[in-house]
Length: 458
Ligand code: NDP
Image 1 (cartoon, rainbow, N blue to C red):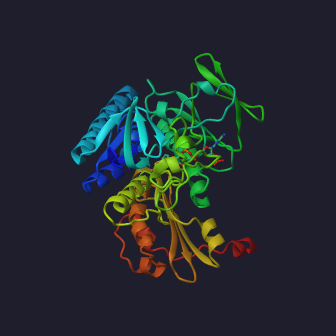
Image 2: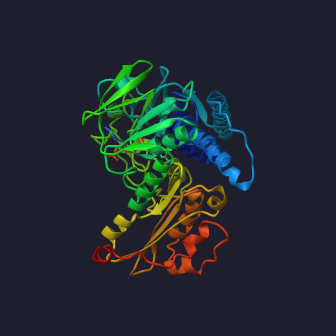
Image 3: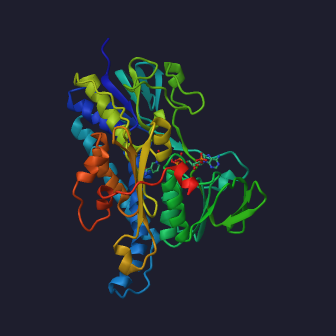
């Protein structure tokens, strides 16, 4: 049977666009649909606008630090509406770039809500299209717990477009989004309270990183309420009051929830087409080739709820296009995926945490340093950088590298190459550092952290 298209991608975010362009470059007849704006979460509601706001917040530090270097600067004034307008102009420009990339590649764009009618038929705005292969790159959305008053809260979507900067904000959640927005709002002058249900922020990250970041965030005036659960929210005057399970009350003029995201898998005809989902998360089940339970339907990115990161969605999309249309089978799954949190200070991390390494290896060595960056000497800023290497004692391989401090994402991005190549600690030691930089510390770490047992006996 002849289909209208060789590939029909649903969702024009980073992953869907990457897959579609790569497929079209090999001569495939490609269509792509989008029901919101072309560009998706990363470009329009996530990574890119968030990072622009992170830059904005950092200028507060730069201005404060400048005095120690001889600058006399009048107290600066920030305009939130100007920042949001500039950010919106940039995301609109990027949307245009994405549209052009798709049309230059020869992919047909259908704007509207897409629905599967069967394994080869997609309906967009009442019009049917058929395709040999279908790619679900349908992303995710923020989720909030069902508690009284939850309708008053905003998510990261609205936080990026608030009409004015809140004077004080409560952010619920301790993941990537919560700590990043805590840094943004606090840097721009709001007073910030972070509410986490556990003991520490950033579950899944190395414990030293978690403790270090919390200490530095507190030093910046961010209040972290640990082991705290919000059970109700009510409007109070022009703001809100939040009741905790323990009976305490918090108040704020804006409440933001960053309590995780869920795949956009409802209302799309996935069940009708036979696409199996994970019952609890609603994520699309896929194998390592991005294949769903239906042989010609594939899924990538946040819709599969594995590693919800833009570069992994792009890698999965390109791998699929290579496999289907270039006779070049590539399995996108890799074990070593670096990640960053654009908190203030920033985090960069690649490989295993100390706890993961202890669980998976017989013996490990840990190297750690906490130091005051050179820039902070004259600025007087009392903030320290943390760096840590986790090494397998038997093979000498570096299993994990973690950093909290300025430029951590940039530095760890480079180290990710070394870890992907299987670098050993000895090879790190042989590497000549660049002086004076923070990164040189990663190649001059000599003193092992005492074993936990030996430490306890001290
Ligand atoms: P995360 O899954 O990272 O964190 C969710 C947070 O909310 C956790 O602290 C979790 O607590 C808490 N939480 C969950 N449910 C509740 C609840 N009912 N009540 C109170 N707290 C709750 O989600 P995010 O929303 O921060 O981000 C979503 C994903 O987006 C991330 O996992 C990441 O993959 C991606 N992302 C990546 C970024 C980057 O690369 N820089 C930036 C932003 C997002 P607990 O730990 O106790 O479960």
